[in-house]
Image 1 (cartoon, rainbow, N blue to C red):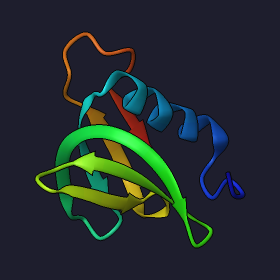
Image 2 (cartoon, rainbow, N blue to C red):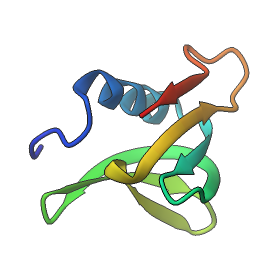
Image 3 (cartoon, rainbow, N blue to C red):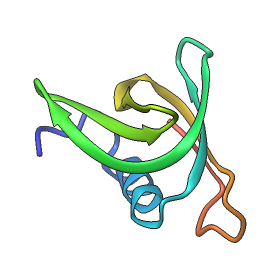
Image 4 (spheres, one colour):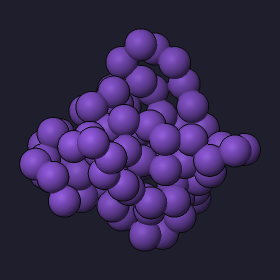
Length: 82
């Protein structure tokens, strides 16, 4: 994968959300809120994205994340601030 554009420990939380298919609420730096199921991560043109099942699938740039909240009950974590 390309260079880590967010702190690598925060990157791990996104990977866990994708691994377990957590339902998440993302707050972006522009204050927009997006909800959906974390599907996968991808790299395109040296930028990293979270693929979110949001009818249709939406690509969210990782460098635009301000907060990730897990809505799935009994998840391994509940909130991450970027």
